[in-house]
Length: 238
Image (cartoon, rainbow, N blue to C red):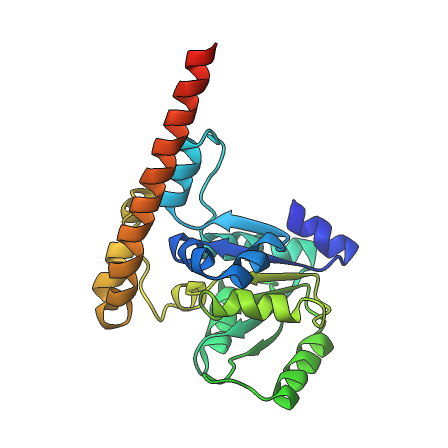
């Protein structure tokens, strides 16, 4: 496993678990694109990205769903000795997440938790956060700040935090702590998780989805048309 190799070698990397929202943010923000390009791993968190990869000739691509990744690594951690730190969420959420995962996975080692303030922190406060994380000696720092804030945070702190692995998982903190409901599996498999989340948080998400989904569909369709035309021209020259 790649993450295990990073932990054993103490090589520092961050993982972007990225869905359509992250892709669309990257299109308009060159700095965010560079953050993704510099990640140790970028995984598709959403069936539309998986389907797109399949259409583009990458049939082995599978969804890496943030909550499932967190559950699986938590499951194997007691045997492997991984130490976890939970950074993010609203007041008390990281602590609740810790309690829930330790109850589900006896022997799970939680090195520490921290729910940062909603607004910007000062340089002195940020330095104190870094010192506290490093003092707890985690192997994996789970970052639940939502996209693109968590990706920016991981990139900015990659060389300051001594843990070998940072993983941005956004709403996984809420889902696994039980403070928000997850979409049923059938909706996840059919690319309808956005509809479930919109139904549960309409005021927060409707603007995002109203803008993002039509643009993604248009861009994906245009890319596939260009691909098909290129393939057709190549076949005609054979």
